[in-house]
Every structure is written in C-alpha cells, then in structure tokens.
Image (cartoon, rainbow, N blue to C red; front, side, top):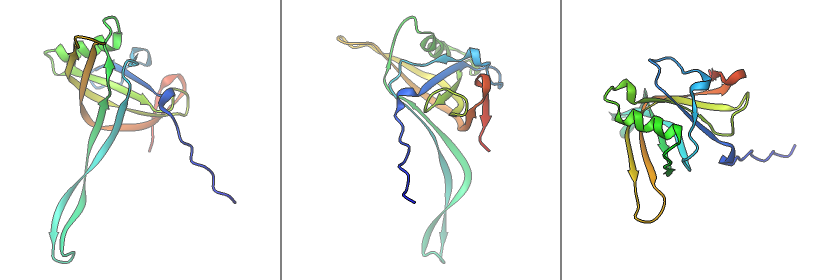
Length: 165
C-alpha cells in the first residue's frame, strides 16, 4: 500500500477569538470576539526540565520536571478605532485591576467547525502599545503574558469546548 500524502494546512481558515476574563469560568460562546486584525499567531508550550549531574552519564542529564510554560504571540496587528476586539485589549491593558487585564483566547488553527481542533487559555494583556508611523498604517503591538499552558481540545456543537484527554 502506498503511503498517503501529509495533510498540509494553510492558515487562511484560522480564527482567533478573545473574551474578557470572567472570574475563572469560561465565557459564553457569544462573548468571544473575532480578533481578525492580526496577521499571525503562535500558540504552544515548552516542557520544563532540570539538569542533573551524573557520573554514570559522564555529564549532564536533562530530566523532565513536569512543568509547562505557555507560548502565545501575535504578529502585526492593524489598529482600528472601532474594532471591538482591540478595544477589549486596550481596556484590559489600562485596567488597574489584575483580573481586568486577563483575557480568554481560543485559537482555531483550521477553522471553526464541529470536530476541528481548538487551543484555549488565558493571557494578561498588560503590554499593549500603538506604533504610529509618520507615513503608513497605525499598528497595535500586543505582547501577551500567558497564564499557564494552553489547553487543546475540539469544538463540539454550539461552539462548546471538548478537552483532548
């Protein structure tokens, strides 16, 4: 039997949604806003390890320590005064309340549909700034501070999240 070709995907159907923090509970599906003015997103995690010196291995050994650090970055974001998702990020950044700076995110890498993969989590939106050129379009620089590792899942009916075991 001939091997099958890998199912490469393009990001054109990807979707990023954000919602204000809701005291630890997942926001309602209708509370998420489409974050469409960014041109790229990276999401993932780094597994932690500790280094152990060992005579048996003639040097250092890296041993997983069970910790995980989340990764979330956004590419260039075009700023628009009336975009609700950007207003959510600006309001979070200017909040004096730590919980007010938290934002829920959901990333749908291949589009939003039942059975499709979803990554979700929280980030702190404390680092938001405008880059205003003398010539060209205003950009918004968002540097999220991830709260833990993202959770992987799939989309169920009506936009519900089903965790991957």
